[in-house]
Length: 400
Image (cartoon, rainbow, N blue to C red; front, side):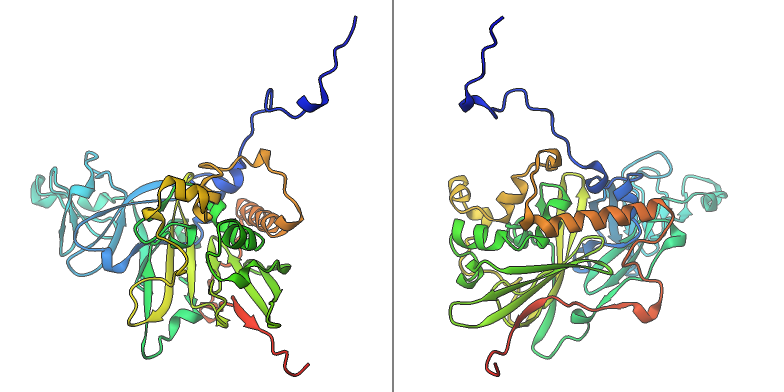
């Protein structure tokens, strides 16, 4: 029997390729999932304080649907939306001094879920103290409402960040849910892809000279087009890299960027402005296939938004053809799909930081599964202040 050999130019076609999968352990964040249980050991930004009012707001985070509101005494509350009575959506509830009252039969719940009144029952509900609407603990800091969604006996302290603590005269603290640094803009909040695709991008310095400089034109500054020498290192709370560039004018700069658990991003000024980073960002998982960025940053009092590149047109104003010709982070990350297919990847040496971040994330997920506390959670008040080490640091070459 003669065997007909396949022409060499047909090898590697897409026909018959095996189904690819994503890494569920690293990416899925719902209740009971390995990564979801790891995530629930930290505090999460669930809303901006100025937006939390006496009108309930729907919130989706870590795959859970909740409602966020502020009672008439100014206290924020985060509750499971289905009323403990007969399941009516508390989104349609009325806010009062002591909490939120269900529109269906008037049961009143405090911000910590206690049932305070059952008006259709004798004496306002003689057994109302037995009812507790599921709730999560919240705190406010830096103009952000934070929630802890994990085991009550494992609740850590809410961190403070050194660069957000003291606001100098002429400056203010600006907080936002802008998708600007995911390639979007202030008019777009929800990014339709898995949280890890955005977070691990922080540990990928080599996409900057390609995507942000030579492929789509200069999106930041021309100096970013210099291919850097990169050193990655593990830290106690994540991964950090230093990207060294020798610029055409002879200047030398170290660009330090850090990723901290569970999804903190500390990125220096994209215009290569000298000095420490001026803010902190959080890549908040909404669910497995969408995320919301939260930022807190010091900006001049005269400004009303995050610093942006003058070379970038607002993403929401671009046409589809323009996004094809000038892709940014949005196209690169969302273009990987709702959850990227890790089984199809071929990581190279320039992806070392991505690999390190995934490995250390997996280690922390396993630590929680083994009953340990993950890295970066704080229980000692003496360690409550977190130091931000990211920044652009120009070397002094005059003394050489």
